[in-house]
Image 1: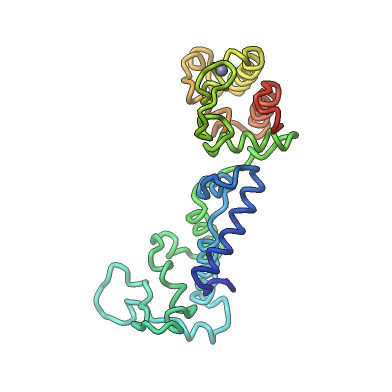
Image 2 (image 1 turned 90 degrees about the vertical axis):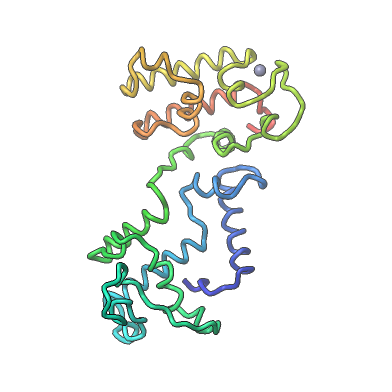
Length: 268
Ligand SMILES: [Zn+2]
């Protein structure tokens, strides 16, 4: 909240540090796009986080959870100003001023995103309910970050860069060098087709199949018709119906495959 009034330049500098830290955690490249990096860690951009804290504090003032002095500074709502029945009578009317001290003041800044919130958040009955709803609204669906589990940090990073779609594979690095087998090196080729990793792939897919069948995610006939893309997605992201332990089993099997395939021997 302290930095809510900082300039665009300062905000960009703060954001830079935030994304750099996220990239160090995931072990991905400096040039990987910021949005997938942040969403992979279930982080939100700092400007959104500041906005979230402004709204939480504003809700406390509005509902009288803070000093009554602060409550007296609240702008009027549309319903208080006019007798007409507006659809958004709870929205706050902002002062029509272009002066920066007014424009950047807390009571002018905090209601703006608040006015655009969905009704079910605005009409929350308690602070706890409001906080819960608005956090979910900003963070999107609650996603787990089990994919950071793994005994080998280098292999975990490698799984991360595959998931982010910016990996050291030749096709992602826009390199025209061919991998030893002579094929174009895509993720699908590496994980499911390459002849150089036949044995390790067999072990990987066996672990995957056993885990999915044991956990009753699929039965035998269903498993036999899973497409390659779905297989790769489960290997990288897990399955929404899988619990923590089987998910880690799959991720560990992929890490072992990546390590034993020797394709990334300089990285792992
Ligand atoms: Zn190959």
